[in-house]
Structures are given as structure tokens and as C-alpha cells.
Length: 368
Image: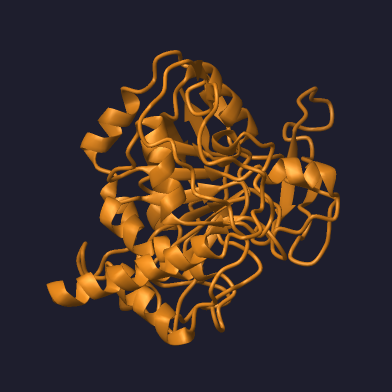
């Protein structure tokens, strides 16, 4: 791709973001453009940092046509960057050096779990409850032995609208292909011959986590469902916090989804939820983000790209070779981050080591 083409692509992506902000006539939250009094990022009084402007929160956006989405996909692709036979994509950006730096963030040893208990009851469209059966082993040393033991059988359909999980690189493809040009050709028994989640499981994810707590940034309980988060919002957070997203990071976005769900028991994040705009793909590539995560699905719903339900998933999995963590529990993480005045931490996660799988239930841990 020529320098001129790259420049043109960046102009196109800038225009998409600018249009999104221009359509913010009906803001999704009552947020002002400047901080008054308390610094909502660092919880301090009096100290004011430069770059205090916060972009408006908009639900309206210019629809993206199929041809323009193809341009976004092409601009975000990192196929071949780690070799023609690469199986882990953006996880390659987590290096011994970034792991060492992430470990150095641990000061107190405090841990925070980032997953909810798997629900055994709730069932709806795109939500299948966990089936859990407990059984008792027969006496292993005969009927007179006092030894007793039990086991479990799980049936799990973790993709969808509720369970905390990681989408592996093979989850979403485009036009019959997966990341790095592999065929989208799963077997019902063996799964995918390439890009199965076992490749990430064998390395694990040990990285710097970066929390962008959007409700805290805007002084609200939650970001209203349907709100689009663009590059302008992310860069405004960087300016306010003094942090910069860098290569090998896991980027966690908190929208306050669980606060919304508490108020509305029928809330369905696959119908309407706050999420990222597809135009952030090139930025994720340029910054070298290893994975993205959120308390929803990272994609904004309802869809706004012609013929595409989850454009951010397609860009992440197919173009960037990047896993996505969906439906994480980030509320306690936000409270601890605020109390410690620390938006970065050690992020640890490992999916189940299942050959050919598209992802896995997961319980990531943040360590401060």
C-alpha cells in the first residue's frame, strides 16, 4: 500500500469519525464538554490537566456502505506481519519485554476478577444457560471405604449475549476467509484446523491492561445503549488520564452495561448497546493493541454497516488477528482503579486448551 493510499484511507476514516460527532445533536448522556471541579479520571480536586475537552456522546451516525467497510478492512489488515503460518495474530505483540513491564505494575498484589458467574437459569435469544450436572463417583476402594468424590459435566454455549468469554481469532471471518488468509472451513468434530483457540491457550495472555472507564470520564452511571465510541473519545481519555495505549496492551472499555442491566431486566446487548465505531480498526493496528475487551460486545448495536452485524468483531478477528473479550465484569475493576488512581494493571487470562475451538469461557484477572 503506497503512502498516498494510506493517507487517503486515514482521511476517509477521519471523515467517518467527524460525521459521527457532527450527528451528536441528540446526546446519549448529559455530559458537559469540560471538567468542573473534580478530575473524573484521577479523582483529584484542583489539579487541571491539558486537553479537558470531551467529545459529545452520540447515538446517530452516518451509515457505512459495503465498499467503505471493505476499505476499512483492507487498511486494518496485518496479514503476513508475523509470517504466513502465524496462528495467534495480535497476541504476538505481547513480548517478553511487555510481560516484564506489565509485571512491574503490580505494587499491592490486589486482584480483581473480571468475569461474572456463568448463568445457569437465564435463557433468551442468543443466551443459553450453562447446563451443569454433578455426579458421584462409585467407591474407588470398595463399599466400606470412607473416601467419597464427585465430578461435573458441563454443557456450554458461551457465545451470545451474557456469559463472560473470549472470542478466538477463528470466531469471525469475511468472504470465506479467516485471518492470514486461512479458509473458513470448520469441521463439526475437529473445529478449525488453523487459528483454534488452543494456540492462544498454549501461550496465555500476560499483558498490561488499560481500562478506559467511560462512565467515570463523563460522570454518569453508564453510557446509554446505542452510543458510538470513536477514536476521538479514546484520544480524549488519553489526554485526560495521561496514559497512552501502546503495543502489547489489552484495551478494556467499560460502558456501564451491568448498571443498565440492573435497571432493565430485559436489556439485550445484541439489540442495543454502546460500543466502538468500526473506524478504530486502523488505530488498533497502529498502536499494536493485542486484544480488546468490554463489559458488552465492543460492537455498537444496532448495526450501522451495510450487511454486517458485528463490524468490530470482523475487523478484530479477520483483519487484525485479534481476540475479543465479551461481557466482562468491569465494575469492581473501575472502583479499584479509581481508589488506587491507576488505570493500568497486570492482565492475565488463558482460554481453555481446546483444539480447533472458536473461543472459550474465561475468567481474566487484574492484578494491581
